[in-house]
Amino acid sequence: MSDPGGKSEEIGKSRIEAGSRGPGSSYPRDVHIVHQDGREFVLVGTAHISRRSVDLVREVIERERPDTVCVELDDQRYAALSQERQFEAQDLRAIIRNKQLATLLMNLLLASYQKRLGMKLGVTPGAELLEATKVAQENGIPISLCDRDVRITLRRAWHSLSLWRKLNLASGVLASAIETPEISEEELERIRDQDVLSELMHELGETMPELKRSLIDERDAYLAQKIRDTEGRKIVAVVGAGHLDGMTRAIESGKVIDLAPIEEIPPVSKVWRWVGWAIPAVIVGSIGYIGLSKGFGEASENALFWFLANAIPSGLAALVALAHPLTALAAFFAAPFTSLTPVIGAGYVAAFVQTWFMPPTVQEIRSVGEEIATLGGWWRNRLLKILLVFILTTLGSMVGTWVGGVEIVGNVFR
Image (cartoon, rainbow, N blue to C red; front, side, top):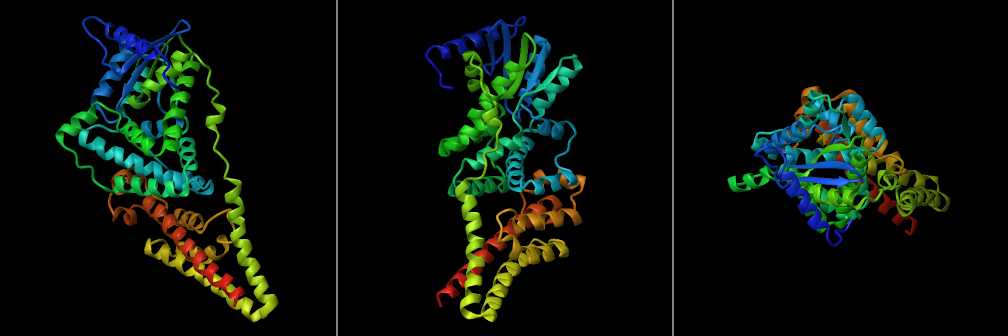
């Protein structure tokens, strides 16, 4: 998706054409008009926390009267915006069963940062996307949701990183979510005209090219192809300003983009699968060898040590999170066994039990964006507490596996 010679001039011409539309009025620079195969694509680049973008979206749709309005939303995000909900209790259980809590956490952290910036500007993040759907409905214009499922995007991004990069990213995003953004009036003015989340993604992309490929380049291609697949001779597409140039080049190229490869969630590496099974194999094998060489009593003592080394830190971790008593009990008894299989971790077992006995209320789900930025909110908000239980019990189980494993393997050579 490079910019071959002459493309920038074509984009510039599109802007001039856009500026000439309407009596005595012109579109700003973040409206690109592309003509391709007898069709017209009006691409509106927006900032997701800008009141100006909300007004611009209404102006362009009402003036252009397109055959279809495309928006940078997937079904899940559209439901969250239009129905003012995020995750219901039954959805949480499905997320836990599918082992997607880490993805949920990253999504909430990014959304929280954007929402708190939006509060400073007096507009709800994503308001311009919702405005596009409202204006289209008011004028009887079909709507097309053109973005890739956010869960696929985040999981592909997460999968592309090494373990060290994942730790760096998680700590950076967590720090930005907890910190209260203190910005000057000049900075606020600049942000009003930009897509802050896309800008953040670009900054991450400079330090982590793997993220840029998943979060920006792939979505530029995905959005462009979905928009071209939409029915109608005139299409208005409302997208984050950070995607505008890449999408414009993709549409102008006229190349058909195969979406199947970028809709897949990459499988876990075979190396990690072997590592995941190798650790429990070493532990079980070591206890078995101790039993054969030193007797049943020695093997029983090592097995008990393994049990307690995993159970105690995981159970204590649940108590530190102020989890339900049965959650702490489940973490205590599950950790020694889940540590012997890579299929499921103690954190997921504890999180599921916590969700079952203390599901979050609707109000807690709606307030998670503000609560996530406060230390007390992680213990007060039930949705955040589920995530806290997941994080702490997972760490407890990891500590137990390390302590228990070192002791038992060491006993083989004593």
